[in-house]
Each structure stands twice: as C-alpha cells, then as structure tokens.
Image 1: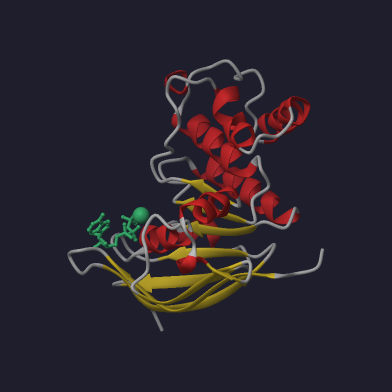
Image 2: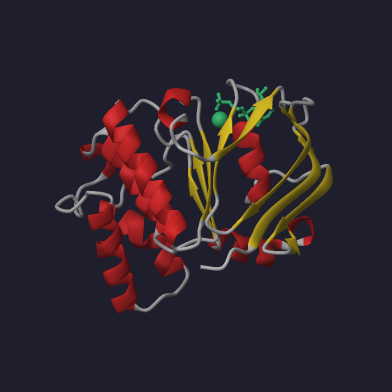
Length: 221
Ligand SMILES: Nc1ncnc2c1ncn2[C@@H]1O[C@H](COP(=O)(O)OP(=O)(O)OP(=O)(O)O)[C@@H](O)[C@H]1O
Ligand SMILES: [Mg+2]
C-alpha cells in the first residue's frame, strides 16, 4: 500500500484556561504508521490527542489531517473529520445501555452505511477482537479487558484514517496487553495511522516503532 502523509503538526501550542497544555509540538505521520506517545502522567498525551479530533482548539501553529488545515473547519467539517478518526478513550466511554453489538456498529450507523455491510463489518470485528459470543452482553457484564476490546473494535470498525488509542492497555495483564497491541497493529494493515499513548515501556520496547516522548507538554529532546 502506498504511504500517504496523513497528519502534520507544525509548532502547535494548545492550552487550557489554566495555562497547562502542549507547547511547540511538531511531527509528521503517514498512513500505516504506528507511533507510541510516551511521557509521565500530566505530560500532555491526552491533550495532544484532543487537538487531533478537535475537542481542544489550538492556540498557534497548524494541524493538517490528510492535507487539510483542521483549525479552519466549521462544525460540519469537524463532524466529517471525526468520522475519519477512531478514538479509544482512556475511560472507554462505552454506551452502557447498549449491547456489545450495538456499541461496535454505532459508528457505521452514524455514517449511514447499508444494513448488510454494517452486519458483516461488525461481526468481522467482533471476531477479530475475540468477543464472539458476547454480542448481546451489556458493558456492565464484561471484564475490564473485554470492555477495552469493545472500545477498540468500535474505533476500528470504520477503518479510520487515524486511530487514537489513549492508554489502551492500562490495567490489563501483560498477555492481554500484547494482544491489544497486536490488534492495533492490525489496523495499520488497512492503512490506518495509529497513535497510542502509553506509560507501558516494557510492553513496547521490543516493537520497532517510532515514539514521541512528552515532558511538561513539550517533546523531550
Ligand atoms: N480540562 C482541563 N483543564 C485544565 N487543565 C487540564 C485539563 N485537562 C488536563 N489538564 C492539565 O493539562 C496537563 C496535561 O494533561 P493530560 O491529560 O494531557 O496528561 P496525560 O499525559 O494524558 O496524563 P495521563 O498519563 O495521566 O493520562 C496536566 O497538567 C493536566 O492537569
Ligand atoms: Mg491521559
């Protein structure tokens, strides 16, 4: 698959009202890249992800997604942008009154994909993340690791251009963490660019992948 520039940060600063945030961040990523975003708690990892799906507006610099300057996006374009981005949140954000099947197929419904395609894609992903048999379970009936898999399947189901995974292996045992990492790597096979935040250096040190290290909101040099 041909590589394509998918994300470009140039001197990006983004802050909250209290002055915390990320400062002067620059990097570039291509389709099918996988990069680990490392750094201690409070260093700005989740904040950086928020600027990509525009939950937080940047103060200065530029963020280009797929060669488009997203700071110029209005509400409409922002919701289209979000369809191209899958997010696995630190706290999962599953819909607790919906089943595993409903949680995972929701992004496809929102994108108004046809029923048959929703059905085949959803079962494919449920199978891939090892949740076959749990389709009708509600999130409260799942273990932490299983919830994590639902969140991953939901983020991957629409084959997004960018997949943001915020500490997806937090609180999981080492074997499961490795499996989760392999699932995320699988997403790069269909061209998705994956950014994964993690504190878990032992998990990723054998992976020959790039990483970006943040410290007090800045890329550590
Ligand atoms: N909504 C907010 N308003 C004000 N400050 C915030 C907000 N969210 C985060 N911060 C601050 O911004 C800094 C970066 O936070 P961020 O959540 O990006 O860290 P993190 O690297 O993801 O940490 P962790 O590993 O604990 O998830 C921290 O100092 C935090 O207190
Ligand atoms: Mg965080």
